Length: 243
Image 1 (cartoon, one colour):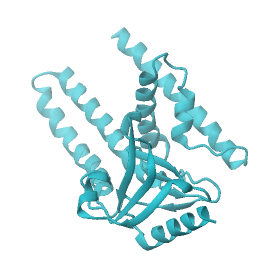
Image 2 (cartoon, rainbow, N blue to C red):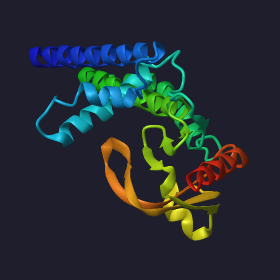
Image 3 (cartoon, rainbow, N blue to C red):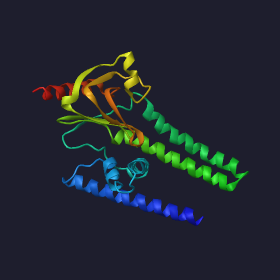
Image 4 (cartoon, rainbow, N blue to C red):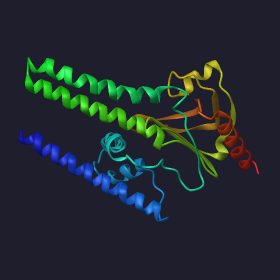
């Protein structure tokens, strides 16, 4: 019991420290002295947490979800100065699933707790705690879709799908933007969606998936919610790179 209390206090302290750092970065952004994505602020705060980078990445990923689930209410999407934003989560329907799933989980918590309490009160409370934690995760993932949109800046394309995918592409590396074909589905973000736009790169670069997992990709396909405007923004970005 004592270990659980100490562990909880340590985690609460760590979360508090991270939130203070994120808020400080946000104030610097408003003051014009900084421009930091909350996700990167959390990673920077935890950079020296462990000598093993994987451990820091996993902890940062978890706290990022908790931040968006608990502390991002009232926040505006992170958009660097001069960048245009585009969403890619509404048409694919996955975001709607993440919004509905927490409600279903909440409706199930009380009945499951009552049933499990007949066998073990401790098990019932453990199941309730886990369910509430899952709700926070689902809410965090859903909010991140809106707060971390795709960015088209003056010299870059930053593809972001909430906390599940991101790829920053310098404008000179965009080789081709075309309509997606059936075979491009294997490059889709999110996976198993039906993409409408395919972006080919001049060479493979590193993309980031959930929990900081990285891989090299040279093609990415997606479904912009405002496809005409997104295509026009990419055409303008590519034309500027050829000037």
